[in-house]
Length: 71
Image (cartoon, rainbow, N blue to C red):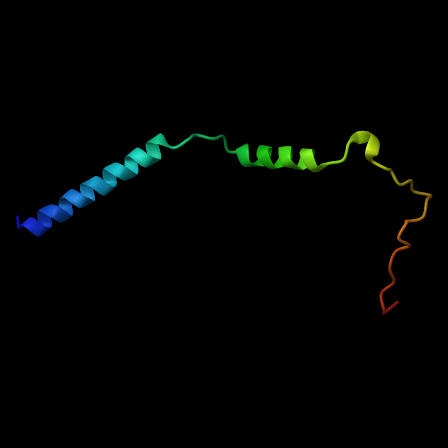
């Protein structure tokens, strides 16, 4: 076996071993961890319950709505 082929084989084995080590040592997270993190951020941005103003069905919309040019 010539020296260049031996060096290529050594590099390939090193890369495969490194790949196994990286995959094996990565942090395990549940599949819904990103959903839970997003929900926590959403809850942090939400107004407090006593700050929420509910609009009743018989009250007019405060902005008056919009009319399109075609109607």
